[in-house]
Structure formats: structure tokens, C-alpha cells
Image 1 (cartoon, rainbow, N blue to C red):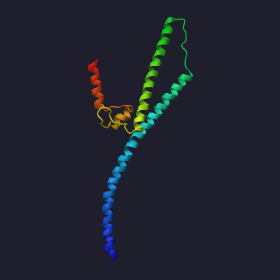
Image 2 (image 1 turned 180 degrees about the horizontal axis):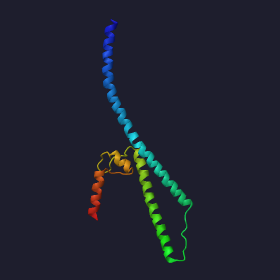
Image 3 (image 1 turned 30 degrees about the vertical axis):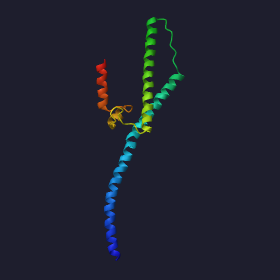
Image 4 (image 1 turned 180 degrees about the vertical axis):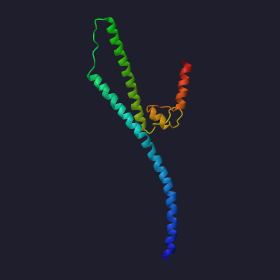
Length: 150
């Protein structure tokens, strides 16, 4: 009587293992995929943020003074250079804000979702432009609308 008991238990075990392991594997892959998929983007954003903050700290500590040149053209060139540098710093400040917003979206699990249509933004687009909030279709529409307004 021991033999009939073993045969049904073996036949029950193998189908259950096949049916249970396949969905469990898929669930594990789906759950791990976004964390791994966005983990490298998160580390890139954090590195970029740290580099921007470090550069801003160096600039604050070693702030160059505007020199007074006897020649007016030299003075004008120095002022143009300083204005250009300030515009670059403004752009970096805006980028820093976008990086912080992207990291916050990662924390709230809304990163990678288009703000306009609600669809998932493709990984390649996020990797190329990690601070984006729009999928390529919505961004194209936004740019077309901006051209019409101008």
C-alpha cells in the first residue's frame, strides 16, 4: 500500500512545481526588474547631483572677483565671460532641481511614468534623459504646440 501512495504524491508534486514555479518566477522578475532597471539610473543621478554640488561648493569658496582692467574692451570681455559663467551656473541649478525631482519620483514610485498620458516611459529614453517627465510622443506634441504658439 505504500507504493500507491508514493505514485500519486510524485505525480501531484511535479505538476504543482511546474505550475507554481513558472508564475512565481515571472513575478520575481517583474518585481526585480524596475528596481534593477532604475537602480543604475538612480546611481547616475546621485553621482551627477554630487558632482554639481561639489562644483558649486568650490565656486562659493573660491569665488573669482571681477578684475578692473584699464582697457575697456578687456573689461567688457571679462564681464561677458562672467555673465556666461553665471548663465551656465543657472542651468546647472535648474538641472539640480530636476535631478532632485526625479529622485523624489523614484521614492514615490512615479518615476518612469509620463505626466501627460500616464504611460510608461521607455527605459532607453530614461537612460538617455533621466530627468524627463514625458514620453517621446508627448514631448513631440509639446514641442509642436510650442512652435505653434511662437
